[in-house]
Image (cartoon, rainbow, N blue to C red; front, top):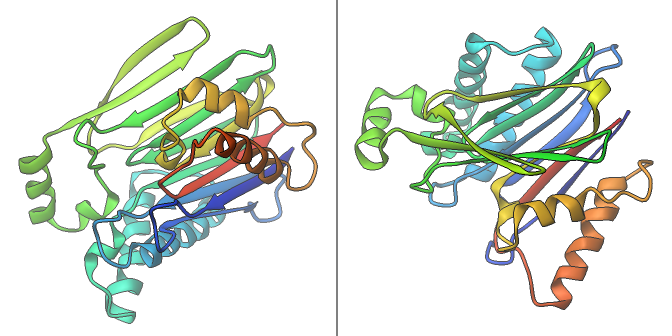
Length: 255
């Protein structure tokens, strides 16, 4: 299995508030991808995104699996470092958190907030999930730290989250609680590629299916295969004056 990631600042951003890492889980043959997309409306979320990702990495490599208490510990630990040790405002933790990791015959994906998950199956078909909030205001893990912020969020934005599952010949909208993470599991023997991405991948203004197809046309899966493919696709888009205004972070398993 090959793993790679891609990160690029958006054209309208001065600071990249996305962050992504990949690696192996301990001494096992399993791998992880973890990314975070900081909220542009909150201060210092570029720092918060990095802290969230590294706390998630530490927890995953310790437990090799996530549960509800793990997520709560991740945000509490990252928030302690940011606020108590670095003196940053609590809002710096306003960021999404998306992880993908392999375990035995499965690939587990967890999404807190919004984002995109793409799966290319061995038969060539594609399935992708677009997790969105109609208000364009994702519910971040950081809101669990303050009951007031949680109440204010519900008052301002409601409780609606939509998970669009789209594949060859079908489009399904799945129910999802606004304050629960989206969990998706794939069987490794059915998968050619699994990709996770921040919602910046949608800022090209192109159809997600077309983007998914363009970003998974790997000539091979050696080395920095994802960086090569996505960089080439972005250059092709730019020739038609199609650019991404938002930061982009993308990670991929290629089996």
